[in-house]
Image 1 (spheres, rainbow, N blue to C red):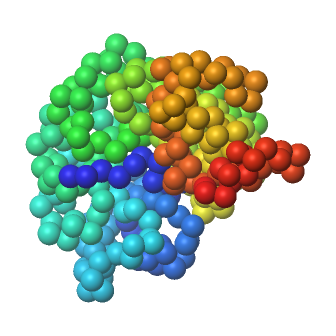
Image 2 (image 1 turned 180 degrees about the horizontal axis):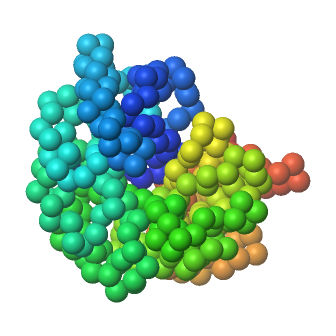
Length: 316
């Protein structure tokens, strides 16, 4: 299958599969700015409601089928099964052709084989979630990353960091006055960015579960991006624009990336009072261009009149 860019995810909103307004979101009528949606059959659904949730998901997919498919400008659509057994059932639904993939909950080396056997439909992309106690062990993560490279690598869009579940493993909850990086996740996120990122996996950032402190969300997003994370889970539509604006690229970075990627670039050169070295900055530059493609470029500050900056703005 041809996977889309992980930067296409932007802000990812989770909705319980029991919700009655899922179709309104899928068709872009309710939250038009949303880039990706996960219909959750796992933690967001109580055990007694699982059958109802599955019936509701089937009805949503039937209605999509009736109108000939999802709209091109609607959000990407994922389903989060409860476990590998449920995934095996959903995998064989013909109506899953209207879904972009599965979010795999609580993936570990111990259950990887079960998921490999359950999700055999090659048209379904995968977003495994790292949210079990093993995640705190970098050796376990290195082993898991190598196992994923050997089995599901070609189907993985991104790995999702399950911040709340990982904090729950420690019996902790985020202090609403600080970012997640001020907690033990300040060790986990950089570690995963290094271990999994060096293997070529994109990672998405954990949810920010506070609505009353948008300024802390902005601080956390800056840290997410500095660690190379490509998107972030949202708990409420009010967070979507903030998340997606944070993913926009500065004109300075855009220009620097273009110069680094230029085939005529010198081996080392100075731009904007910083050293640029294409041999080492090439991957960064390609990612900047990919972010700009999906999220756009921030406008230049009024004081900047450099012609190349204006050019970057004109073609972004």
